Length: 494
Ligand SMILES: Cc1cc2nc3c(=O)[nH]c(=O)nc-3n(C[C@H](O)[C@H](O)[C@H](O)COP(=O)(O)OP(=O)(O)OC[C@H]3O[C@@H](n4cnc5c(N)ncnc54)[C@H](O)[C@@H]3O)c2cc1C
Image 1 (cartoon, rainbow, N blue to C red):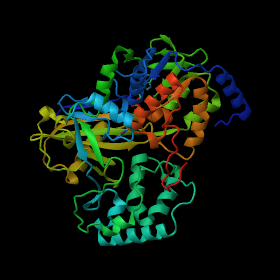
Image 2: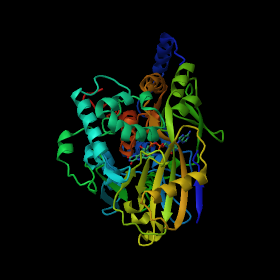
Image 3: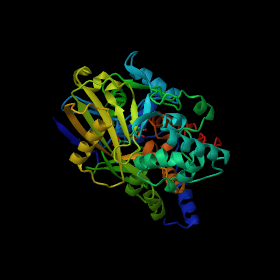
Image 4: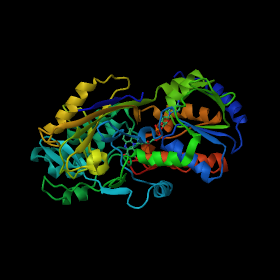
């Protein structure tokens, strides 16, 4: 059995001094156009470059630290022939621009279409997602407690105004649902206490309560029909190459101005130059930076101690993706499963051979199947690889996703150092200190970890942000996504 392992790797300032800095930097602001340097060949950086070409703006260069494009939306094929994503990725879209890009990159039939079929493991059973809409599938005592708590919480009117995520969960769903699902599940995903997180991001990420649906749902607890809520109720997946096929094709069409193995180690904002790991200096008029914002602030010369400290307060999770290939076919037609229980290391398991037969060796799903598991780790935690792989494998078998004696054909570990940007209580205050300073210096942090906003942290958002900033820098048009007020769970706009 091949084992493949890959490791990708306030001080509050005097307000008038900050304002003075920004005024000085703004006076250096440059006209639209000029040399646009993009750091990062994830989907945001690639989409930005692609849009520049569409706008006939040829003075750009894209620098990527890794050997290949794709960033978080990359895929790898291990030595046994199994393809893996960096955690469960599914393609869905809020934006016409992302749809257009996909239709240019993939011919008819090259994107497989799936209906989401997602479940939560609870005690001895599978409960369709969203959990709170399917309390009738729980054991009678749990169902009664959850429904009572839900009714009481809703009668009390939920949350008024801003609240931390923990308070929001209690006020929206009631204590029994929080104790049984939301508390343990979110603690696993975020590796952060919900009380230390804001609730401003939940609109499309946490399903609201729909009493009509709860009360009219079929009562059979073994129902295999999962709920339709949310933007990914149906999704697409490349027929081969994994999710990474999107960026692979996009980078290919962009050509040699996508420079891989080019890590930026310093940004000299005063003279508008970046410094690469080998010492090469490259000038720019505008810098689109799609890597993590805290790293950008740390490597940018001239950043004030206050701005650097604010960036240092941003928090993220690390995820260990353990991919397990088995020499056994699967008859399981479901897409992915959530695991709130503490004795299972991962928070989610994805039925990856179901997404595309090409994810297993020789597309031979009569012989092979594959599962991807995701385990969140606090920033900086060390992974004991063999132990984690073994416990993931045993949990898949214990919960019946894989037959007890199925031969293991491959185990692959990817550690994703920056996986989820955590929406902490002071995230927006920190961003309000860092981002204006950067922009006044001609540096535009964009993408999942450039903006550090989980609520716009998906692939379609990354693509849209890349396209928007290209248009702004070339034509001066305002960015659409960043200027769109977010709908909050309470239905108001922020
Ligand atoms: C576990 C997991 C599951 C997900 N599931 C989904 C999903 O189902 N659907 C969905 O739409 N989205 C999903 N996402 C989100 C999706 O992966 C991201 O939205 C998208 O890939 C972000 O693209 P990006 O370009 O903004 O950032 P990134 O992909 O992070 O790209 C940034 C790039 O910058 C490079 N870089 C960083 N620093 C430097 C430097 N100093 N010099 C040069 N290059 C540098 C990096 O190597 C990287 O390639 C998921 C993410 C994770 C982690």
